[in-house]
Length: 626
Picture (tube, rainbow, N blue to C red):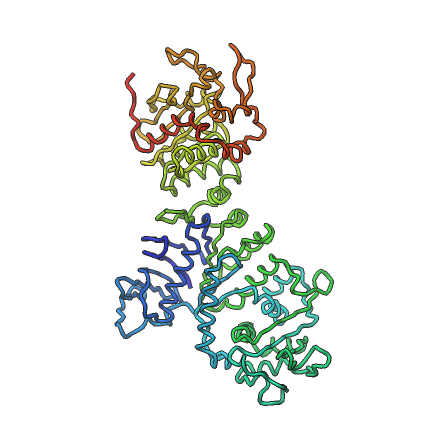
């Protein structure tokens, strides 16, 4: 099963959303919280439930194209009607005829890691409906694979038991070795309780030789339970085996011989289905396993979160490897140590030859950095979802706190311009971005309508703005580089002197500005404000400046109010004294925590800078007359 293309219209935050997949059978969906990652998974669930269950009620409009058992299928739901194509041939569905289930995946595998309650609600709601509707079929184990299969932490013990039952399986050997568990099974206990449909009926006694054994359950579940109980003494007096009237529970000891028998008679999938059906009919109260880990006896309840999820994911993939399934893994890495995050993504990438398609959502930097393909980036309010390079994804998810090297940062800029629906502003460093963002929030009382990207230095900013790659990429969206008015002047001046650049703002109080004549690429020096003009202005009448001898960094724009005065001091310089920002060693704290406590008055010096940015964005900037 492999989705090739999906279009969704009018579902939650999606309007005319279209995503095209490539030939990979696994993909990663990334984005900040609230960007729509979980909504996308929910849309896929709703679409296939609608088709699998022949739902009567209407849902949102969609179009989905996928490959199933070498058949190319395209299904569209529009204006209340379903139509589809099979290998390019158009098919019609009348009101009475339902969509053919043989053209649909066998099941949707939903992995719930404890993060998204909405995904969990799909699992619980469906299991409750399935349990009530198919009780007799479940007991006989004659029911086909259910349409939604929830992968829960409750499956850990079942899947770990499978590793020991089928320990000769090469993949299972690898899993046990990875989590340092010896292949020796020590002992186990299966605890059964009254199934959900007999809760009100109390058993006074129970023998495996009676008709009412295991609460009168029949079919294959009864047969398999009888096989498990072989060798048990059935004496509840020792507190280990048999039926206990007080608790209405039945204890079965699991031994190596019985497990060996299961491995010879039943497939991995059949054994898993048996234990999971016990869970579904609420008959599985507990499965306790004693194993050998690091040479010592160990309870499966003591496995770490990383070990647990590693077992669950890798084992469940093996169980369903021959099924035509879609795995939706919603942030399975949320609570994992980086080592296990790395192991998880490695495990996913190792399943490239599986019949299953795996879609994983994440906003974890470690996971994305390990990913081999371009992930899909969901952004708030973006109509389009794009594939982005890993380098760009890492910076997005880390809020620019993580980066790899300068080449990766340059790649990030190129990728950002393709993906973002807003202008791009480049600065000399991270603290510049923090301050500009906060100033806009305070003065404009809204989130900035641009993407801020910090670079490494003034020189790198200059080289980026004059790069042929940037020029070739730039379209209607402006790219604006902002330089401090200090030694960075020389790098700004190099841009201004290019023959293809025009000087469009010559007033330093408004921000010296030049522009590529044919592209929306701008280079700007910080505007000068009266409170610190002596750091830049040499002659007020002629507007002559000290050029590269100027000393205006972005932090100095806060100077001028009583609440900010403590962060600055006077230092001697050529021609007199100058102000200096003295908190250089903790610029990041200043640009985040400290300025968050400043009043609106302390941001007034940023008005010329923000106004100039707004002018550029609104295309109001025009070249001034010489």
